[in-house]
View 1 (cartoon, rainbow, N blue to C red):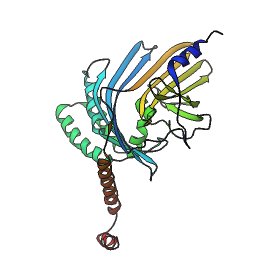
View 2 (view 1 turned 180 degrees about the vertical axis):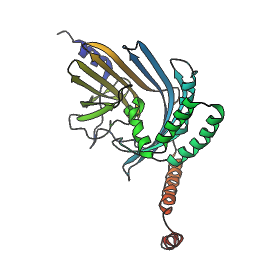
View 3 (view 1 turned 90 degrees about the horizontal axis):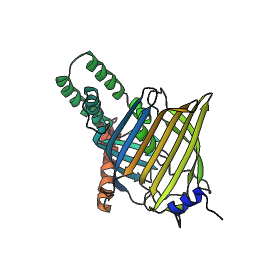
View 4 (view 1 turned 30 degrees about the vertical axis):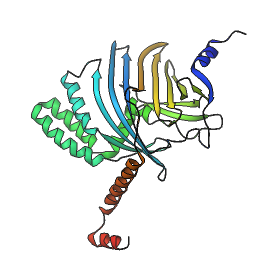
Length: 322
């Protein structure tokens, strides 16, 4: 019997080794503290405006897992930003890069389902912004500059707005998608992905069945896919996303997302995003001593935060009874 094209592709992509399954498909990072560096590319094509743009950057992500609180903590850094394969040159590009830089390093807290909960180092970001704002005001003048700074600052000073703004970026949409929890015995689950589209006021909401292939790939990864369509009269939006997770640690190896907007069978807008682990910058796993020190620093910071609202008398009794 002749092999179909899909069968040939599966034979090339997958091994005969199964993904190890316990209560959940993934043992969520058996260690505590990991750091990986990724290359990110976001390519946008707008057929109506006959315009294409490409943004590329490196991001270093440190992932901490706290089983007792059922949460992840991410520390994210950005570097080497290129726009259309060149360093930022236009004033608006440079200004955008300089203002966005105050966010990094960025520390975020999520559930094990990767739902965003909090910006851990928010006060640190505000302190950085005050210094950067003073420097920018020395370098730039004019009404347009003043309006830009005012708008950025208004958004920055509202913590809840800043947290929700990450959902408007393709990179964070992919990074914080729930790839870990809630699968059935067939390694499938119903998911929702709110995918941001430039020039659209709100992200498009795609509903899909997310699937894990039960076999490892030849690259020793667990392969996850989701496909979805939204139809509205003569328009259609199509989303395809693939994830590869390291089959040992289940850290993100890479992800590819393609979203096309069609009008009467003509593609009017297309977004392609890729996030790849840079193998020349290997994964760093901290020693157990470093992990213990990290936990102690975290608990100390939590106690300091708890004590902020206590009076001197309350703090004394708390110390006395500890």
